[in-house]
View 1 (cartoon, rainbow, N blue to C red):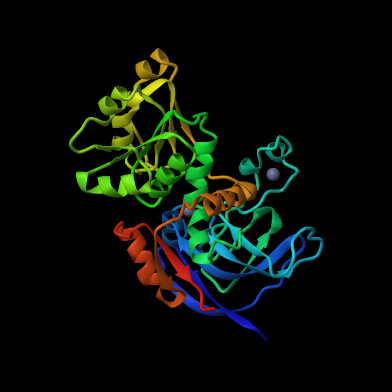
View 2: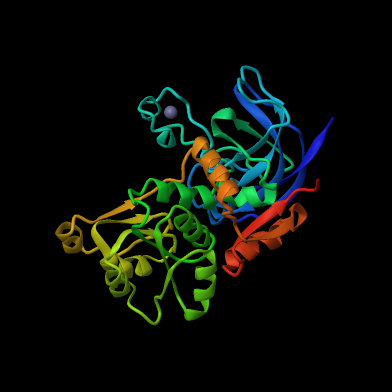
Length: 338
Ligand SMILES: [Zn+2]
Ligand SMILES: [Zn+2]
């Protein structure tokens, strides 16, 4: 019987275990994917640490998946063996709940999340419902596509739905895994792109990624600096610091939006600032499979790439520790043996 290697977590706070499992068969409406690369995202800690209730263990994490369809389940239309595909955080939708009927597929009540409610991409093979699958362009090697399936789509989709228009001042707060992609997307979308991070040493990187202005939030007041530019139409908050978010809100232009994609636990908000200038604070969910597909296509067409550190599947513990250390530049990716 054919087997595969997967990395599983057997209990909250348990170690990563590399185990052999039988290669699964795709059920109705699903495909089997031969995983070629899978990014390690900070949200994988929800599985590793047991951060959300109801996770069924053992669980295989991983929601930044790039691979090839290897088998097609019954009833699948439009997908074929050999197709290059990706799977992200959004793990599929039911199509019949009220949110789905309104076209808000991201909010489907079934709450399917890749690598959390079903086994994900820290594996040689995985099963995914076709509602979670995105086409991956041939120009993108799997290790380059993988991080775009979460860090990429999150920033790309937030920016393109932010209401900002080419030429508008758009600031990206934070220059880490999400932020280094956010700056590139903002620049390629034609925004007047501002990078905000801590320390002057990050300025060359911000400019290399496409920022035309850099604000060192340690040496300067980021809100005051943004107001000198007329205020930001959008500030994409990728940093996970509520303090840093609070410090930039005063830099929003009239009708400006602080768009939050970084999972901080809390922040201070100034109601007067919001109502006085019709400003808003909003969160953004990464997106569904068509958003992933468009993220990959845009990245392939414009040259937006994630900077990655690559590890083999066997080194998952080391790779994960590298991600949690915050020292990785900037995303950590597992590459399966090929
Ligand atoms: Zn993620
Ligand atoms: Zn639904």
